[in-house]
Every structure is written in structure tokens, then in C-alpha cells.
Length: 266
Image (cartoon, rainbow, N blue to C red):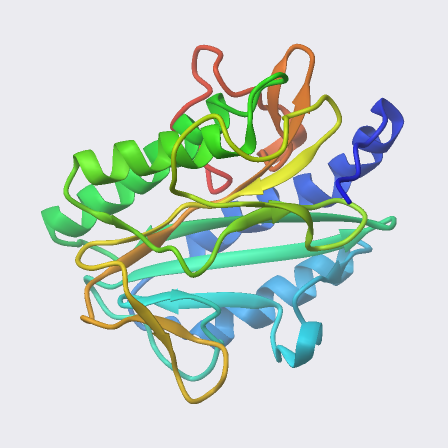
């Protein structure tokens, strides 16, 4: 069942989503050669709890950490640990928070120092695809309009959309209906309705789209070991258009001048 939120509930969702966005800004500033993924995770948990929130991922189906940090060929669900980031890596950082009974969820992929031109293009195209998908999150449309916009942009640049994982509804729970694929034809799936809140999250591979899950039961990697990128925002569908909830300070509306290109990480 798809749960549409009232205006009052959307306002109650904002603090959790703003907290996610603000912490991601801070994490982006911390990323650099020599920083471990455990360092980033410890900072995020301390920061979330100090703000009165709880990590949404930690303990979820047994996941052991606050952040999912996925490096290079890792697509999503990477487990933080002693791994030190190196110059030229790309690191996806995914954070979920629950605050006052509502969830926020967003992700960024960050270059570590100087990265190759190809890696920089992968990050750029994936983030652009996120915003193109968000622009299609409008009342009267269909859920598949979002994924169609993502897929068209990604494949036009020679990259691949990962298909095993999808976006989702979010709000009262971390994962709600509907699922939001990043691929497929437009005009299909549930009708987009005012009050829906969606986590839209393109996951893109530089090479082939096929992935596998490692022995830890969580970390998904590209089978061909090509680089991957992941960007995500929590978005509310309103009569005035899509509103990005996961923006620092809580101000963000897709489709307006200056809207595209400003990720949760700044």
C-alpha cells in the first residue's frame, strides 16, 4: 500500500531529511586519502545521535553500521571498516536517519582527491540522472516516468543502470511502497499522487550493469569490476512540483533554476 503524507506529516519529515543532508555535507568534507570508512561511520553515528536522531540502517536486517560506504566497484551496501581511502577512489556514502518517527534517506558519491576524467564523468552523469528523474516526479505521471528519464540519460553517455536494486517509498518506514526502478518505459506503474514521498536513487556502472553480492551478505559489486556511482534524494510530490527534502537547511525544489546539480552533499 502506498502511503501519502499530509502537509503536516511532510513538515514532520523535514528534520530527519535535513539532518541526513547536513551530515552528508560534513562527510563530504572529511573524505580524503588516508581516511578510513570506519572513521566516517563513527563520525556519522555520533553526529546523528547528538541531533536526537537514530541511524536507520544500523541493525536493519542485521546491517552493522550507520553508513553504507561503497568504494570503486562497490555499488551499494558496503560495510564501513578499516579500509583507508586512496587518491583516485570514488566513495558512495548512503545515510538513513529516523527522527520524530519519520525517516530520511540520501546518498552521494564523492571523489577521493583527484580522480580520472572517466570517473568524474560517471559521477556527473549519475547525479544529473538523479535530477532528471526527480523532475519527472510530478502529480499525474507514473512511477516509471522517473526511471525512464534516468535510464535514457545514463545510457546516452555509455554507462549502465544497475537493475537489481531500486528506489522506494520512504517516510513512516525506511522502505515503503512503491518501488522506483531506474529503468523501463515511461507511463507505467502507480500514478504519482500529491503526498507521496520517494527515495529516488540511480545506481550506475561504468561498464556492464551486472552485479553480485559478496560473502558478507551485503556489499554489491559490479561483476566486471567497473566503477559505480550512487546518488539519492528523498523527494515529496506536491501540487507545486517535486520538493527535495534532503537538502542542507531544508530548502530545495527540483525543476526550478539552481535546483539541479546541488546534491545532498552540497
